[in-house]
Amino acid sequence: MSKQGSRLLNIGFNNGVVASRVVAIVNPNSSPMKRLREEARQNGKLIDATQGRKTRSIIIMDSSHVILSAIQTETIANRFSSDGTPQEGMEKVLGD
Image (cartoon, rainbow, N blue to C red; front, side, top):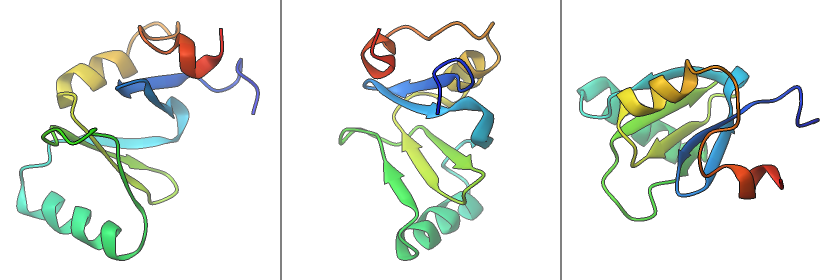
């Protein structure tokens, strides 16, 4: 994948996901999201990017992967809707 065609979304701790593949960014506290998290764990589709911290958002990808993040849902949503420039802290991931 080229860097130009795939904008990375910073989800915390220098972890990034390809923004165009994000289906939803949701709050992890509801019962359906807890079930989704457990189902993804059982299917080997769960990615924990919290670095041992409390899960504050769940990111659902078009590949059916479920990603846990320690960053607030609102913060990730704001980053997702920004102007498309690399997010703060993503220089290492992008290799710039």
